[in-house]
Image 1 (tube, rainbow, N blue to C red):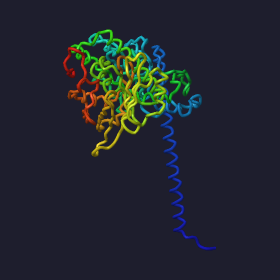
Image 2: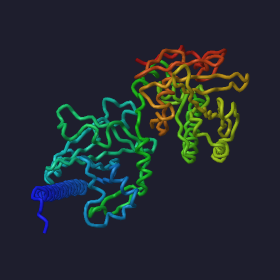
Image 3: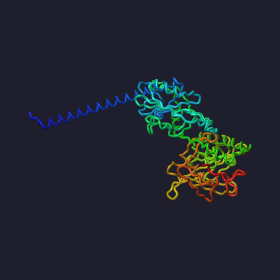
Image 4: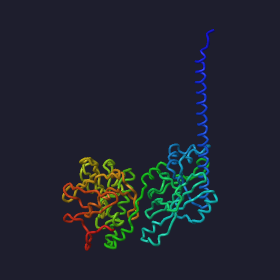
Amino acid sequence: MPRLNKTGLLAVLVAASSAFLLFQLYYYRQSSNGGNTSRQKDNQWEALRRVMAVARKLALPIFLADPTALSLIGQTGGSAGLGRGCSFLCTGRPVTAFAAIADHWKYDRQAVATVASQKGLEVEQVRGRDPRLLEEGAELSAAQIPLHFLFRSTHGHIVQVVLLYQRSGGYLWHAPLRLAPSADRRLAPPNALPYGRHAGAYRRPDLVLTMLDGLDVQVPRNSSHFLTLRSEADFIECRHKEARAFYQLYPEDGSVEAAEFRRAARSVLSVAARTLDSLNVPFWISSGTCLGWYRQCGFISYSRDVDVGVSIRHYRPDLATAFASAGLPLKHSFGRVEDSLELSFQSPGGGVKLDVFFFYQEESEGVSVVWNGGTQAKSGRKFKLDTPVCRSYLNVWRTCLPTCLTYLPVFLSQGMCFLVLNSAGRSWRACVCVFRARPWTMCAPTTGTRRGRPRRPPGTGRPRPPT
């Protein structure tokens, strides 16, 4: 019988023991992490249950608006929500978001604090002035309304409730979240709150009551569509105060013709928005229409047209057919798809024209430039406007932000609006940068021409930007 090598046997035993110890350590850590995750989910679920109990007590109609949870529902159809465990609502994130349509909700600040305390929750109530009154010029009398509720459980989980209000255009709006200096900053972890960095505007969602993780929750019927709306929901409030200052210098045209134009322009823009939305074509207000929004929160009554912009990447051959079916037949088609395309549509009765400008992107002297062309109908002269892409923004057709033009939810391109302000005859300074206009054959005016100059109402001087 051969003799055993004692050194080799000892080495084998040491290696086997080490492997066994490592396996035990790994198993212990996995078990510990699983326990921590389970406790975290239990704490999160309990916080949600308590917040929903507070909402029921206060008759606040909340619905699930959390992007992570809605994404999970969209992927699985919510089929796992009836099983055991917390599969959808317990996302592992420090904040869960709900929203509430609060138009007819009776707010009582003390009642919110009392009920939350009874349920073992801290609450921060963020309030602000009612923008629906600001639209009417009532800055001093604008009441404080609740904008956001931030609930915090004893275990540190935060539940954000965003309050939505219907604006006069029929859309739902929420305010940005701005904490008071005395507020507890633990309630608003940096970059953790799903809502509140900007104001937002949404179409009213179709809600359905369902059971998720053992809780009765209202959710958007089409969660994927709601998340798409959220990605495009950043809202720019009209500058009501500056617009009123402008009208003090240059009173609004109160003639019957001007009032009829504003009514017809609003109708044409509404039809254009519905038509382009039905084709999934992104657009923004442009040129004189954008200038009117920025300067006076409305349409320029003497412009006699409505201007929108579309990226040439989203051009569709059936655009003209779709507009004709909506009651806006094609009047002019200038340029080609590959070069300075512009389509003009006529409203019924011939009162208002809709101009759809298509925008192109190219490199010029090492600078990325977005440009659009135009053609004067009577003379056939071509115009070109260049827009260097500012580093602070994405491409022009990716900076579309919902805004309100005479109480109609549309889209505003920041870059194009700044270009319009700069090419309108004054050095309008705006936020980050001012775009320059470079003519093709000459600089194209934004609101029509009269001997090469922008048209103005009789008896008025050149409008100056409000300070």
